Each structure stands twice: as C-alpha cells, then as structure tokens.
Length: 111
Image 1: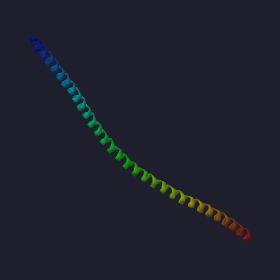
Image 2: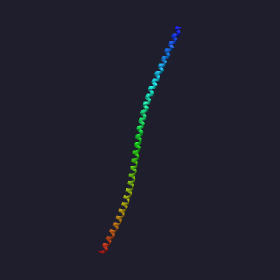
Image 3: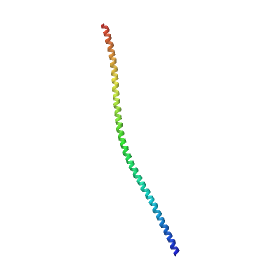
Image 4: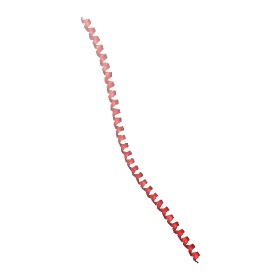
C-alpha cells in the first residue's frame, strides 16, 4: 500500500509540474499578446497620423494645382494679348513707313 501511495504522490507531483508548465506557457503567450496589442495600437496611431498628413497634402496639392492652372491661363491670355500688340505694332510700323514714303514723294513733287 505504501508503494501505491508513493506512486500516487509521484503522479501528483508530475501533474502539479505539468500544470505549472502550462501556466508559464500561458503567461508567455499572454505577454506576447500584450506586446502585439501594444504594437498594433502604435501602428494604428501612426496610420491615423499618416492618413491625416496625406489628407492635408492632398488638399494642399489641389490648391496649388488650381493656382498653377490659373497662372497658366493668365500667361496664355497675356501672351495672346502681347502677340496682338506685336502684330498691331508691325502693322502700325508698316503704315508709318508707307506714309513717310508718300510724304517724301509729295515733298519732292512740291519742290
């Protein structure tokens, strides 16, 4: 009977050790879970910050692109008006030269 009691005690000790090992492994997994959840929270916060930054950048880009388009339109309109001024100046110069020649001819005929 004493032998059976010793065997039972050995089983009991082994069972307690196994339960303790399981608890240690559970605690290790629990620490890993806590670490992963902390990292997850940090990444979610970083993602929120980056998303806000991206939104601000997109808004700024939209405003700048609109401004650039206005500059392009103004430059095109100004260049077109300048081209008309050049054409008018060229026409005016041609007319002025022709009138100058005509005046010279009239002056010579009168003289």
